[in-house]
Structures are given as C-alpha cells and as structure tokens.
Image (cartoon, rainbow, N blue to C red; front, side, top):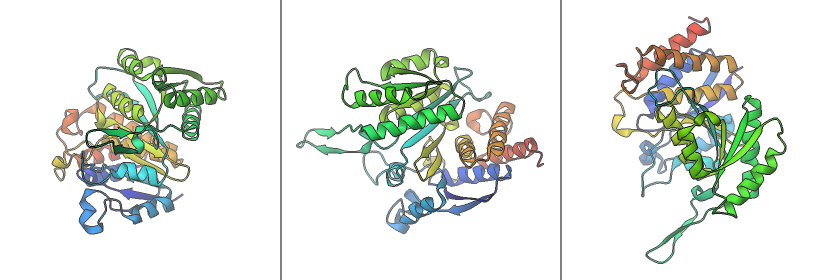
Length: 339
C-alpha cells in the first residue's frame, strides 16, 4: 500500500534531520510517497508567512505529516508554527513517549512512560491581554468537550498498546473549577475502562514522584501546560530532548515531529542527532499500520546507539547526522532481511 505523507523539513537543522530520517525510513520498505512542503522562518520572505496555506491543504489531503523542528521566536516575531498547525488542524492530542535506550547516558534505567497532553486549550490557547499598562492577563480555558476527547484518547491508546495504568495530572486543589472539571471528566471516562487502573496526581507532586520513582507510572494524562512541562521532565529521565519523539493527533490528521527545537546555530553542519525525528517516524509507521517496519526501525535505532560507533557527538560518537541515519538504515534493512 502506498502512503501519501506530507513532509515539512522545517528550518535550522530541520532539513538535514529530515534527510537522515528519510534515509532510515526508506530501508524499512514501507511505500511512502512524500509530498514536500516548505514552512518556517526560512520561507518568510518567499511567502510572507511561516505557514503557507499550501502546507495546511497538503496535510488535510494526505492526513499524515512528518515535520522537522521549526524556530519560534521568544517574546516577539511570528506566531509559533507548531501552535498554529495544532489549532488550524484541531490536533487536540499530543503523544510523547519517553523510553530508555541503552547507550544514551541517563541517571535512570528502564523508563517506559507515555505523556498524553491536551493540545488546544488551557493557558496555551493564547487568550491574553493587557490590563492597563502594567499588568498582563492570560485566561485558562478548560472545557468539558476538550477534556472528554483527550481523556478518551488516553484510555483508548492505553488499551490498544497494552498499557496498564492512566494517571491524570492536575492542580484541582487550587484551580477547583478549571482543573476540577478536567479531573471530573477524567474520573468519569475512567469508569468506562475497568480493565485499566486509574489514579490522579497533583502536578507538583507528580514531578517529584517522577524523579523519585518513575517506575510506578505508565500513561500520564495532562492538560496542555502541565503536559508540556512534564514531557520535558520525562525526556530528561531518558537522556534529553535529542531522543524524544512526538505526535499530534486530530480526528482527520496526524502530524509527527521531534520535541526538540531547530538549533539554528548548528544548521548545515551535519552534526545534530537525528534520533528524535527517526523515532517520530516510528510512531508514524505504527499509525499507518506498518507495524513490522516500525518495530524494525525502532530496534535499529536502539542497536546503533548501543553499539556507539555510528552516532553523533552528543551520544559519544564522531559521525554526522546523515551518517547516523545511514547506519540506522543499514541495521533496519538487516533486521528485515532486506540487506
């Protein structure tokens, strides 16, 4: 089966990361037809926007996209392309696995966590304004409908992937209406999944628990802001953002991307680690039903990193981005008997 996939390389180091990921993906034998699209800081002069309408149209047509990192200016400049994509396509569910990979330096072992983050509401909705000249106000929005669909996504994912427990993260002891509504809905939805264990944790306690005893947790169900923070914390448990994949799901479109930024100061140097984007491609293959290809690609990444020779500098190696992608491709092909 041929899969049409929108490819958005991004800016900064994004294009070279995408090249490495495509090399690795090609070795799986999955029949992917790429629809290449431009977005990000590098296309502002060409299109007058970092997110041309053609990108959204392509994603709506193919319904699947693989995206490299895109620069978001801090404090000024254009609106986040990542946030705009989520809002325009209603990508309400953000999925961020955090899994130990032998060979990646970390203080922890055997981490296997999945963060499910609501992607469209909360303070990240960006509803804010000035209150006079000396105060700014941001409005936290939590809806029953938004909470219900992210809770159902988390429980359906947990059941489908054979996970054991869902933990809802909140601050309902203080924000009794907004976070209280999120928790109320989570408890109601949990009642429909008696095969899965359910619990809840206050967000600050959750952060401490993850540092002290992460083995107690499995799928973490979070509102937008807490999910963003906790997913970075969990990435730290497995070695950092360089090995942290991500996916965004809506009812019609799924978009896969690494969690890390675009690192523009390293652009064109062929030195950055492509692992997070390749692992995002693993999630994409699973979504496309290419399970064997996904499992082989994931195992190949683990094998190459564990061997420690054909890896980038941050993993203790000396090769570049493209060479690491090629090493993963060679190992993938071998695992699938395609070499």
